Length: 96
View 1: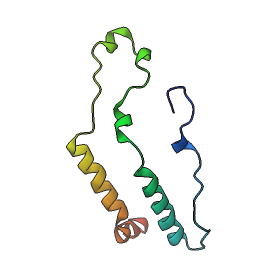
View 2: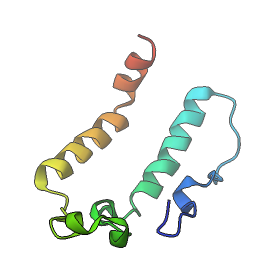
View 3: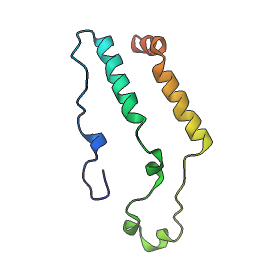
View 4: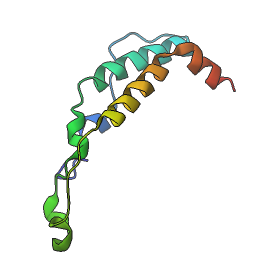
């Protein structure tokens, strides 16, 4: 949700730029490629910002501290993307 409680563009159904394919594996690979391309454009700093600070109770506003993405979080996100890109691993997990 955005600051004014509207759905953000990320919540809208995506229109993919490729032609329909019959193979579910090929379709999954194409959807993943589109999603990965989209994820690269996201500014992750917005995940750590409180857009509606005025909604906090007064006593919490004084002690609220915004954080940032630290190195461990960045590493975790990168490892998750690497595992997501590992198709043999994903296929193995899909058939368990």
